[in-house]
Length: 250
Image 1 (cartoon, rainbow, N blue to C red):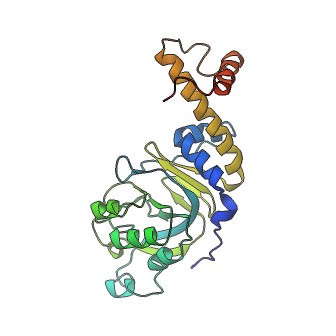
Image 2 (cartoon, rainbow, N blue to C red):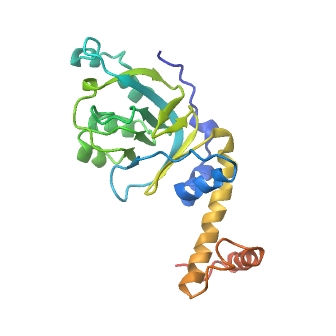
């Protein structure tokens, strides 16, 4: 199966929504989704390639692998311009996130530094795999935000065979549909259903702003009780603080 590309980042995200998600963070966004009954939204075991890399936000463009077979997966076949792995790198839309279902395997690389450099040059927002990357230090140097399970130095055809582009996949134990929005940061990667993105981003950004207020109060010696989680009274205090220009924040 080759898939029919239909991921349109412009439909899923505005700049405002993207910024709100990044500000909220994956943990807060996961809480917003939990309030809506969605529990399985955080990828298990998928973490940033390097500490301190910038957050990743974008709609999903997917690549799905199955286990490799020796008569089909050779270095010669891998060099073909029709190879789905290579096509994924060339066809992932600018602004999107390449999401790779690698079966949780690090026996073969989901990607290396040349592919990461090409994605970066094409304006792709980042890459996420439940497998791993080879040449990981060089991948990090490209500046492309990347998330993975662990390093995977062996060549892709050793273990993985690509079968589909831009179709529903599982990554880190979470269902990812093309166009779902991914947010990755130091805490991990959360998947937001496309139709919930705008409202979750707005609610998450507000929650993050309230947490700034609460953290400031805690630093001043205030108890958690009546402050976090917020109450109607503490929310009124927060509104007054915002109206006053958020005093105390540098």
